[in-house]
Amino acid sequence: MKPLALTTLILLPALAWGQHGESSWKFENRETIHRSFDVSSASNPKKLLLDNMNGFIHINGYAGKEIQVTVEKHIRAESGAALADAQRDVTLDLSQQGNSVRLYEDGPFRNHSRGDRHYGYHVDFDFEIQVPSDTELTLKGFNQEIQVKQVAGDFDIHGFNGGIDLEDVSGAGTVETFNGKVKVAFSKNPARQTRFKTFNGSVDVYFQPTLDADLHFKTFHGAIYTDFEVNALSSGESKNGKFVYRSSNRMTAGRTGKGGPGLSFDTFNGSIRLHSKAL
Image (cartoon, rainbow, N blue to C red):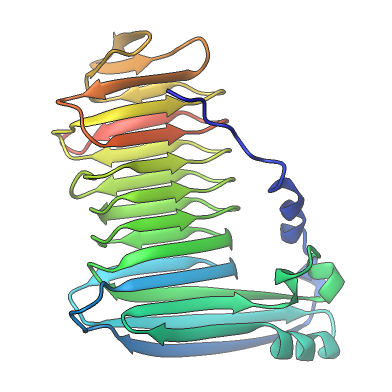
């Protein structure tokens, strides 16, 4: 097993983004945006690509043929002039190519590492989205949580300041944040390589009772717990009907069931827990 390097240096400067002082700002504007995209073509897979800087992302799967988007845009500013700057400079691109829908927040902060105080405004885009249940998801969020429910497509989900919560999903891919918990509940266990990672937070993953996989764990300040019997790990013991595994270098690996796709679980400050949904 090759060591997994933690790359934090390029991320730490971005913490300044969350240090805004808009609590005293009196100028604001709210806008609601509704859009629907037909993704019923059978020739291409359905895809949603969303890149959001500030605001939550909530996605629900349903038995439909459209990606239905509702966005609440909220601007807070220190002056009328700054409010006008935000309305002009911070935009949301909603576009479609075939069965792929792209939602992208753009603004001057994309090219300069400057915080809200420099611009004198703060803009949130809160997304409530319904997607056909087989939609593939590529999601990026910087501040606030990401939630996904009842989606069967593959996923590539990255956050920074906020937890990630996936419920009743059955695809495979990557779930990663920096400050926040990772929680994933599968209605069908992943059939391909899947990765779960955070730096500050716990990792809780709920699998169906029969799990055949090769597992890789890494934590520094935390323990590893699993409801599944795992073979060929460096050390372990049974407590209250659960298996608890530790290793001297905080990295360990093993196989559950017959073995299968590689599943990796990685956190620095937090514990890793694998749950059986039957318990």
